[in-house]
Length: 519
Image (cartoon, rainbow, N blue to C red; front, side, top):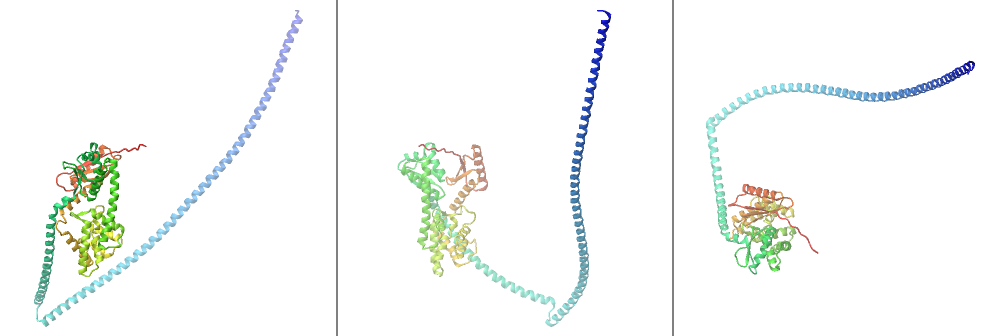
């Protein structure tokens, strides 16, 4: 290669490089211009967006300020109203105080005027007192001159007259008290005689607390006892009596203070012996039937008593209560026979006094009706009986006679007095009553009532003549430890609340039964 070609090649290369650089410069300027244009467009868009945001923010701020202004005006208005109310209340209070002050000032003025009047009246009274004193002295002097007696002599004569009057009244009082004492002594003497008669009834009382059930043979005793004693235990628990099985041949003894329970137990046991099937389920079944029959018998007994006396118009509930008296005793005396007897005595007495014999018999039959429920209702049996008679619309004189037959109410008619007399006559016959028997029944009832008050106790029975208290508790509601606690609590309450000779055994029975039927 020669020099001119080399120069031409170099020049071409430089020219090509320059042209490339020029083109690159042109492209770079075009890109820069485009970039600047885009940048200006972005800035313009940003400014427009900022303007929009600023405008929106301004509007939002205006709305918020408007809301705040409204709230402020409302709260200010409410506060202004409260302030105005308080101002009005203060103004009214001030007016009231002003009126009260005016009233107080007027009262003070009136009190001052009243004090002035009182002082003036007091001065007037002192003057009148002095004047009256002078007049009294003048009158006393005039009287002494007229009577010819001094003041001391006149006082002595007056005292002597009063003494004579007092002696006369005292003599009358003494005679009246002597008469009352004689009458009281006569009444006390009759009571003493009656009590002496009552003490002769001890054998009768002993016979009525037990009954004997005959057995076909001594093998029946084992069947009555049952396996591990379950039969006799079920009988005693269901009936509330004690069944005594001893060496007495072909017989068992039923002991219990309540004649209704004892009669239920006797009839139940006789039917079980006749049937031959003796087990707890059969015992419950037979006992239910006996109780229904006994209730029917009670109703019939009340009707028969009314029919025997010729009394009509008695309420059916009263007849039922009268029938219950057949199985109740008072001091060992059967209350139904006693009531019938009192009715007949009253009929005879009222006929002599020309009183209403029908009403007299009605009172006699009803006079002890309270004893049919006195173990369920608090109070004296006379008051209970009067409430029952009032409930069933008996006449007022009948109600008063029932309430007053033990002098617990004031007798208002002669029939009420006759009721007390007839009741005493019926009770005075030999062997009719015994006070110890009544006290024994009261103690038994107290024992059962006390035990029944404990929580979880289903039933309670006093057995063995009151020497044992058998308590049946809820097996689901109490466990063994709680049952022990119930026994201790009952024993403690019996010791503290009831007086009794010897000791009383408290037995708590907790038993579960599970019954299924196979078909």
